[in-house]
Length: 189
Image 1 (cartoon, rainbow, N blue to C red):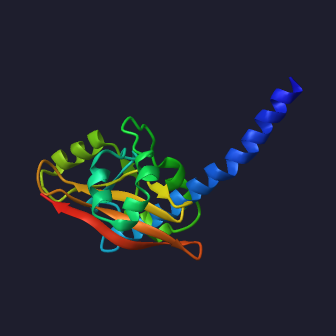
Image 2: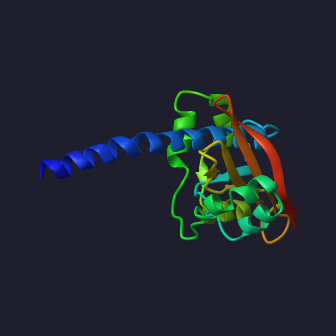
C-alpha cells in the first residue's frame, strides 16, 4: 500500500507542474488574443451594447488542421505531435484561464471583454437587437509542439450563417513570452 501511495505521489508531483505550466501558457495566449481582437472595442458601460462577445468553450481542434499543416514547413516537421492533439469530443472551457487572467489584473481589458457567453446566449442577444453587428469570438484549445516552444490556435468570429471569418495563429515562445509569429489559413464568408 505504501508503494502505491508513493507512486501516486510521485506521479502527482510530476504532472502538476506540467498542468500548471500549460494553464499559464493558455492564459498568456488568451491575453494576446484578447488584446489583439478587443483593441478597437469600447469599454462596456451601463446601457452600452457589446458587439464582440467571447465564447466560453474551448472549441475542439478538428481535421481542418491537416490543411494548415500541409501549407507550412514548421507544422509539417511536427505533424505527428500536432495530430495527436486533435480531440473532436473536447468538452473544456476557458473559465480557469479567464479567471487567472482577470483576477486583480488587466481590469481595463476585462472591461472590454466582459463575461463569456454560450452559443445559445449569444444567439439570444443577437435576436434581441435584431442587427447583424454582434460577433462571437471563438478560440480553439491551443495545440503545443516542439516542447511547448510553439502553439497553434484557431480563432474564429461567428455572426450568423454569413459574415463569419477566422484564421490560425502560429505563436512562438520567445524569452518566456508568447508572440504571434504568423497568420495561417485566413478565411471569410
